Length: 389
Figure 1 (cartoon, rainbow, N blue to C red):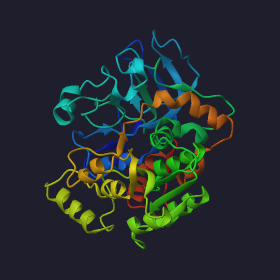
Figure 2: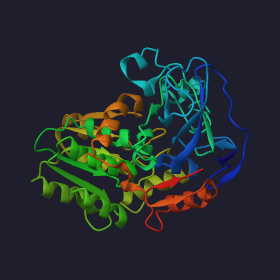
Figure 3: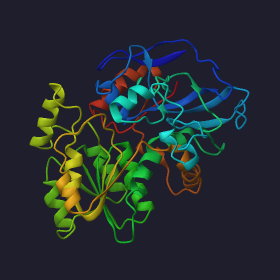
């Protein structure tokens, strides 16, 4: 089959790889009808994710048609249309039984590597390094889905691939980011990053009752999408973000702040963001946490900082003194996608949201390497890429 594979920093290739096979009786094989390039895939493209190996099949946002079913995957049958969560979860361990699927104790065969870096291991993920299981990803013609009696959700015929594809990751992630904020009537929510996850967080915050959403970015196309959702937009290249948020909130700060950027904050944003980039380039640091620092300072006393942007290692110069002295709450996670799927699918069916609004670019797997570059460099108005294998 054809698949997108990783061969080093900036080197994504479309090439032929062996077809997947049923390896366990709970597996299914899915013929991929749509997949997407995620912002966290760009971290792989830019060489920031450790434990990648040459030839790894990448991608973790995928859906398609079930074409082969293992004996114990009793909830699915050949011909079912499914969306596949990016988290791989057994459904039986301590965390899965509590709905915390992204902390599954059984699906990461590389858990000892993860424990050495992070203290313990999350679940396995599709297409996201040999820290997280080395599973083949979904930017391919076919995908083996382990524990398929727990993961994929069946999609009704009346919904298109475009409407439901992002249930695999960015819609649940953006919704979780907003849910973490504990939104109450009258709240102001500030969101850094108007990429795909940020866009979902903006609309989710509105769905959950925020009175005002402030969206921070500098890419014109992203800011226009945020404005279309009713957000007040701030361009960090044109305005002092701290001063403007304090002005908009009468000196109090936002009730909650969402970091939807993570490790690749724009190095032009401030002096500290430039220093972060130098540290990473010279192996003196692992991440660029400018946005997290700013979110902490812009959050009101006893407010919440919600973090869904991906960080990989150890963060420098986080203003923890500000957080503890002002009573901030931090909430963060890799999204336990399965927990959110039924309710978010219902919201789509009821017409409360159509996540396809973020799609700006389309292509085939052969177009994938070029579209990775376009997305990474934010060229040509690119907000979200969907590929049709």
